[in-house]
Each structure stands twice: as C-alpha cells, then as structure tokens.
Length: 440
Image (cartoon, one colour):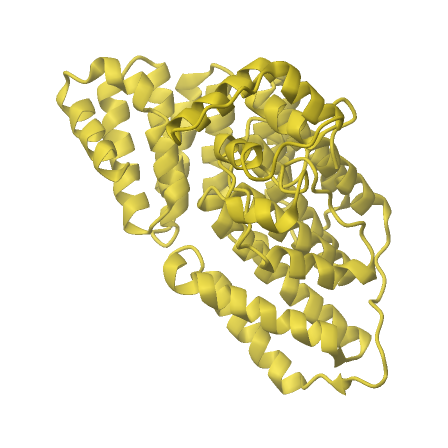
C-alpha cells in the first residue's frame, strides 16, 4: 500500500531517500556512467514514470533504477514494473484465510528488498488498527485431509522452543533450521485436519517461529524480510487467539519503525497494542517501548508516564508465568531502557546511573542485550564530551557483538564513527576506529 500523498512506488522510494526527481535522475546517470553507458534521464522523465505516462525501459532504465536503490535485479526480472519497487507491498487483511499465505510470502526470502521496509508507515498503522478491532476465528478445514499426529506436534513444539531459545546465540547454526521448521509447520497447517485446540497450537507455533526469524532478519538489517515475517507472525497469532503474542509482535514492528527513525508510527502502533495486553510482563515491555518512541519524539511528560506504567506493570503480581516471547523482561531491561529514554531527553546523569544499573543486573546469557546497552552508554558518553570513555565502552560492546555474530550491534557502533573521528589522536578512540575499519 502506498501512502495517500505518494501515489506511485517510485515516488515512495524516492521520498524515503529524500531525493527530488532531478536528484534521482542524476543518480541514474551516474549508475549508467559506472557501467560505461550514457543515460539522458532527467527529472521530467522521472515525473512521467511516476504518473504512469511512460514505463522505464526493461533492458536499460529499470536495471539502473534497481542499482540506484540497491535492489536485487532478480526481483526486477521476476516481479515486473513497478511491483519490484518498495511501497507496492501491503499487509494481507487479517482473517483465517490469510494465515498460511502470509507464511508462504515470508518464506519466499530470495527476493528481499534489503534497502527498504516491506510496508509503508500508513499501511502498518492501519494493520495495527485492524488487529485491534478484529476478532479471531478458526481457519477453513476440509474433512478429506489427514489428521495431524499429536505426537509429532508435541515434538515440533519442543524442538521449536529450543530453536527459538538458541536463535540469538547460535544465529548461523539456527537460521536454516528455523526456516525449515516453519516450512514444516506451514505445510501441516495447510494440508492437515485438526481440532480447534490443535489448530491453536499450530498457529501459535507458526507465530513464534516467524517472530524469531523476524528478529534474525532485523539484526541482519534485512528490514523488508523482517517485516514480512512479523506480518506472518501477527496473522497466525491472531488466528490462534493469542492476544498477548499479537500485541508483542506489533510492538516488534513498532521497534523496527523506531530503529528506522519513524517514532511517530511506532507510537501509533503501540497505542493499538497496549490496551489489549493481558499479562503484566507483556504490558510492561510495551509501555517501555512506547516510552522509547515518545522520548524520540521529545514528549518528555508522556515518556515519563509510560516509564511509570512499565515499572508498575512489571511489579504487578500474576498467577500465570509470562509468555515465552517476553519471559526475559526484567528490571535490567526497565533500568537500561529508561536510561536510554532519559539520555534522549537530555538528562544524562540520571541516564548513566540507570544504564549502569541495568547492565549490572543482566545475566551473562544475554550477551546481545548487554552489547546493545553498552552502546547506549557509549552514545551518552559521547554526548557528555567524553570520547575516550565512549570508545572504551563501545569496544566492550564490539567484542561481545563480534563474539555472538550480532551485525545490528556492530552497525550501532559503526554509527558512532563520525562523532569519534575528530578524537582519533587519543589511544582508545584510535584503537576502536582501527577495529571498526577491520570489520567494515
């Protein structure tokens, strides 16, 4: 779905990059020159493409446009104009008929458009609203199918939970296994016959596996693919009637939007998700992510209200264990992310205290989270005008991120390089910059 004010996916792609029509034309000419070709593309020609009056040539112009936007040419050849451009994708409407198609779409990852999110901001906000107001229902079943073997389902659930647990620390080893496991579950949902209780288990498992894969894609900066897996996860959580899981998946999408500098959409998504959470741990996590979005929007009062709500929910008693997807939520996360919020709001002394507290409380098993929190600290030290301490802290984060193969954490540290470079004469900064050049 293209946002209302951006009618064509080429215009959407261009606006996402902040380019005028003339700037896009200039980049196309540059791409042609790199290939030893000449292109006469001007802004007026781009305008004709965007209004649909002219279609760019398949042999010359479309490959150049794909190169400019960093899109795999396989998508151009396979999908055709303008379907390979970002902004053309839209979430499938929620409903039992779309749970399996959403999984099939996510599993087709070879044509991932890495440079873009899969769906526009408006489409995601509308999708969150649809989830909030739509009741779940059973998916269609036919009597001629074979009954699902419940012993096999038990094994699939147990193995799936183990794979999800290992997904962060053993990324390379689990990537393919998670995908194959989800494919198996998808086939069973599509081909099997089952009771409503078994159906709920199957869709819950599909949602959890999709969510784990989405986080792996997100950590690898494959945002389009991550978005599709979160989209599939939400469809299946909805079909299973898992409201907390669905709210958590929406908050993952909101976190992605926050990472992509769209805090307003992140906040809008969370407005739909938070009122429908049930477990206190789930509600605490969503309020914490809401606080992050509000801090980015410089809404200090509302941010503090969200932090207070997160703390209150985390301390609320519950007879049920927290859902698996947020079972890690703890006072360490509350403290460190609260510190991150306060740092964005300019209250850095209190921010350091809270981030120190959060890092100290983290168990050793949560290496990736520790790397992220250390990077938060490094960013704040830079804002304080202490580049040496910032570099030493970032080096700790880089060591952890490299050890567990967490590319998103490495990217966060690399993003500090422009601000650190003026201090390259000092030893800690020079050592970090050298390490970063080696990992580039």
